[in-house]
Length: 258
Image 1 (cartoon, rainbow, N blue to C red):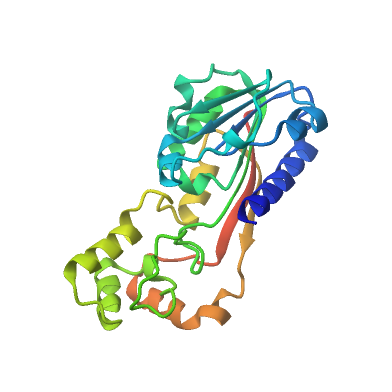
Image 2: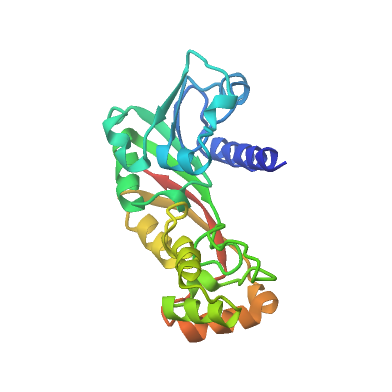
C-alpha cells in the first residue's frame, strides 16, 4: 500500500502545481520521482517530461528505480544523477517547470541543487516542491535512521536531536553494553546519508535565500506534538540548545525564476 499512498500524494501535488501554473504543452522536470505517462501526456498534455533519479538513493532502496514501473514514451526521458549534478545533464534554460515530491530531505547539498534547478529553468519558470518529513521534526524527522533493536521496546523518539554524548547515555540506560553495537546504532542515526541533516530553520533560509522569488512557502505543522511527546521534547530541549522548531513536518513551496 505504501507505493500506492506515495503515488496518490505525488499526483495530488502535481495537480496543485498544474492548477497554479498550467503545465499544458510544457516541458516538466521531476526531481526524485516518476509519474505515469497517462497522467503526464493524456491528462496534463505535457510536451516533454524529464525525471532524474539519484544513484545513491537507488542503491539505498536495493537497486529499485521509480521509473522502471512506467513505460517508455517518446516524450519521456530519465536521467540517473544526483540533483547537485543536474546542470551537467540538462541544457540551461530548457525546462518550463520543475516538480518535486518527498525528495528535498534526501538532497545532500540542497543550496547547490537549487542553484542548478534555477539554471535549467526558462525565465518565468517555477519550482514546486512538497517535502516531508524534516529532520528536526520530533516523531518522523529521523526518517527511519533510528533502527529497531531488541533492547528497545519502543522507538526512542527524538534521539536523533540529542547531543552525541546524550544519545550514548540514553542507549546505555536502555541496557546497551557492547561498544561496537552502540557505535553502529549511533552511526546509523548520525551519519546515514538517506536523509540530509537539514532542520526547519535551514530549509527556510535555503529556500528564501535562493536565487528564486518565493511565491508560496506553506508549512505543514504538527502543532500539538508537545501534548503527544512532552517527555521526549523536554529531553531534547535539555540536551541540545540548538534545537528550535520541532513542530514543522514539511513544506509546500512554489518558487519563481523572475
